[in-house]
Image 1 (cartoon, rainbow, N blue to C red):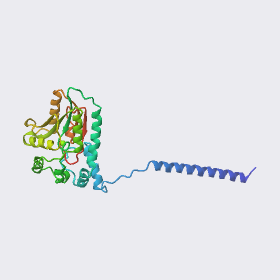
Image 2 (tube, protein in one colour):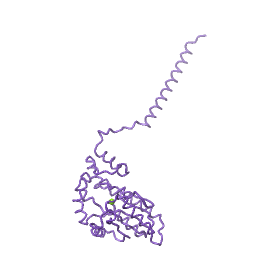
Image 3 (cartoon, protein in one colour):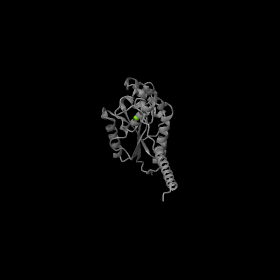
Image 4 (tube, rainbow, N blue to C red):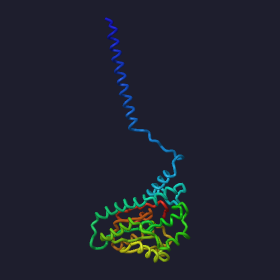
Length: 266
Ligand SMILES: [Mg+2]
């Protein structure tokens, strides 16, 4: 028995089902695309200088770029904005908050042997006024200009690091200031500069003596930290703006890297 109407109904039903499945399938495909969009990769050629500066600064701070001598010229405006536009201070504030969160968990013993190490240049006190004249590190380091700047004894405090310094001392820690500055030529002015910026009450300021002349920052600072430990101190934390402050031996329980995209000391 041939019933054309029935066949037609079956065909219509199948067509409807097919269209429905196709719609559902397409919808799923679209949804999947919506959730996993293809990332738009920026071509290196069209990246603006600010984006490049951000990439470069991140690479420097994470120690992926090493032993660099000058800031790439295309990063000049980015570094200038970073150092003078407020973000640098915000970054220091966040790091100091983290350091104090850690320090507050330490039970300071009554024997006076709980120590911290702080670097001096661009940790406690700042050389930004000098680097403003050097295109924020795009110009090569020039000791004939840097030394007269240091000899003014006018490096301003980093207020956030001064807050850290004072809080550590209040909590009973012994704070050692450790710098690669030469004792013979820069000792007095460094003491004066730290004093006029409010760094009062540290256990010891250690400058580079003739014994360590010409040594790398890593080996010189490692030797000093080892000496501090051999005196019986426990180094709880070590804070500096250079990776060379935070590498080598006797690093302390924790290290804290402060930002510095202007120069590299190795
Ligand atoms: Mg430093």
